[in-house]
Amino acid sequence: MTEQDEATYTIDQLAAHTGVPSRTIRFYQSKGALPAPVRRGRKAYYDATHVERLELIARLQDRGLQIRAIRNLLDQLDCGQASLEDWLGFEAELRTPWSEDVPQLMSEEELQERLAGRPPGLLAALVKAGLLEREANQYLARSPALLRMVLTLEANGIDVETAHAATGILARHLSKAASELSLHFQEHIGERIREGGLDNSGQLLSALKPVALDAAAVIFAQEIQHALEQMLHEGRLAPVGSARGDGEGEKPGK
Image 1 (tube, rainbow, N blue to C red):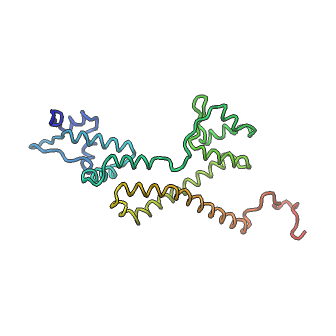
Image 2: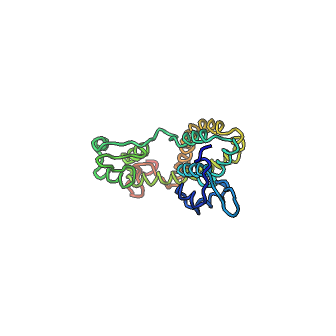
Image 3: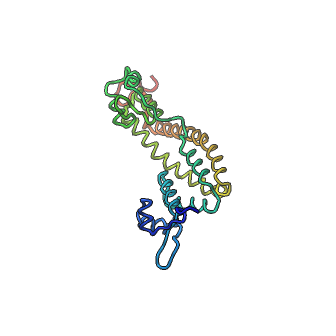
């Protein structure tokens, strides 16, 4: 064992060595994420394992984990129920985009060519809506798929603001649906996933991705068709081009 491995620190020395404030170290201990120090009389001492654990906690926090999730993962690592490499691999797979909609950078010339023949002011409207971001002499579309959808709607008479607001409505409701579905799966198959470990989780994730995308498309199409049919039957929706209360439409039976 090297001298560094045998090194011991008071909490203030550990804070100075790692850059983690003393109060944060105590917080990690209170939440069970950091092992208790060794007591020598009235003083507590930390060693290299605590330094490594603080570095690992920082890495996991950088990946967006909350302290409760970090503690649970560290418990699994300590018990040998999971390995850090497997977890990082699974987390990386989970972060991989579920669709092929990845950010696209376009030059101003490419964008102008794409918007040729469109109404003036459209580019400014797309930037204002956040569908495009100006970067020097280029434009970044974080979601080219959403950009295409909005442009398709604009070509059919729906302005950018209205179309973009519609995507916000979808996002709010689909976010709620995604949360409820995640809880549903956790409740009904969570125990089997935990027993099978990360390999089983990865297998489930691979199967869930295409199913989730297909299910969302099919179910949404069914629901919007039903909603539009209901609006039509209730008189709240008229066929495009039909006369509405101007007295010039053709009377029934004529």
